[in-house]
Image 1 (cartoon, one colour):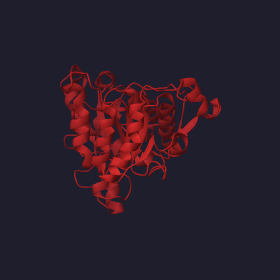
Image 2: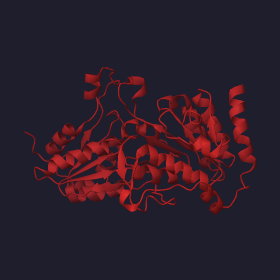
Image 3: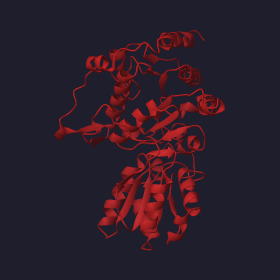
Image 4: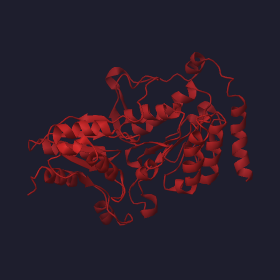
Length: 371
């Protein structure tokens, strides 16, 4: 309790000074960042997340970060690197190892007028805070008749990494995606991460921001627009990463990488696959998927989560219940993680999650071209 009070004491002064903000121009000048030139616009996912938080903390003094090792250690995955040096320990708060405790502090701060970014070392640990996320954060805005917004972002790595065992490998997209009152985001590229995290921080609703540990070090090109400190991506809008006419492949997070690789292989055989990056789990952009299905007449959904009651199951159900069903020339296909607790053994773990060859095989099956 003493540790929790200490953490809250760092947050409390900011609550009292919600309205006492220096001019935006002065704050931006103080924390000016030198971006790459137009010909060098690229960024890792880790850096994109870091930049998004820094820009929003400069823009709005009510934004702060809390979580285990986010300050002095620069974050377990170095996503919060440098933020303590720039903003101080009142706005970058190391917490005790108590997810329920610091998630509750984050929700309380949000209900009091701040905009906390609550980092979980992994969303597997967020199960300790499920009541705070689902009940305290997810329901208060609605139950107050829209009078008490809860602008909190819960972020951290989600899904399987490598060799971390069953308890640290779950994908929670479907869990949180089933909860009215939450917005759920699952970005893929650096541009996704920057634009969606900034949008999540500005949103009056609680947002569950599901990152992927395996993607943190991956470098992506960034458009000039994305390098702007006012760049955001609307939550609830999917992106067509590759256009095609023969089969629609829908994926989120790391599975977008495998889907695009599969599309490259299929193209060599004359098959034009359209790849949709979901970006947002809730709200789900079913309209973009329906329009694609009407064009390609086939649908393949790829995810790293379990097959039962998953994101793919929901998309399949909504397509079957819509007018897009009449355009299908083959059954909807789902490619998912195996229906077992994730194995620790490397050889078995590799078989437990979708990879590029599996997506190619199933896409061909949808086209009745399986050998």
